Image (cartoon, rainbow, N blue to C red):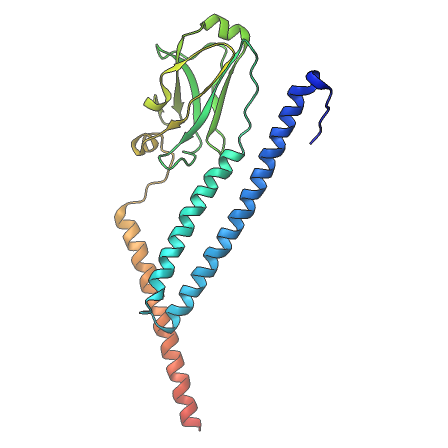
Length: 243
């Protein structure tokens, strides 16, 4: 952090430096917290495996499974917070405008790699405002300079349209943006499952395939436990015979 501290002349720069410092510290703390959660999850998994090897019917296994599920949920929340902490909002002039936000799913996780286009009410892209690629945090930002903002005029209705190489949609959550010079318009676009599928942002896994995979894992785990018990029993028998 580098503060100039020359009074009003450096106030804007110094404030930006302070904000950047806070953001960086927040990201570091979230990274550390995520590491602790992962370590806790690993310990719970190992303990469940240890109990299952001794007795697959141990009632504590179900309890540990529930704890692990809650740890995964917490990890999802932490990952979302890490995405938000990585965002850096661009500056806006007194007569310009900034339209920005995140494109997410219903759980507020980044929806995936997609391109955002700023359009007018008639669906035509705003001249002089290029499309932007949404980053890993799901963040996008349209910076309108003074001339473009003045040309459009206060009160102009705008909308965020999303597109990929295969599809283009105008999500309802990206509509109703009112332009006003010198302001920042925050517009988060939460996509429905159908919109995410249309943009092909997430791989689809059928319920049958998921069930088959789970079944194979369960069968494999059961077989491993059975083999271990058989080996243990065989070893014990051999020792008795030897004695």
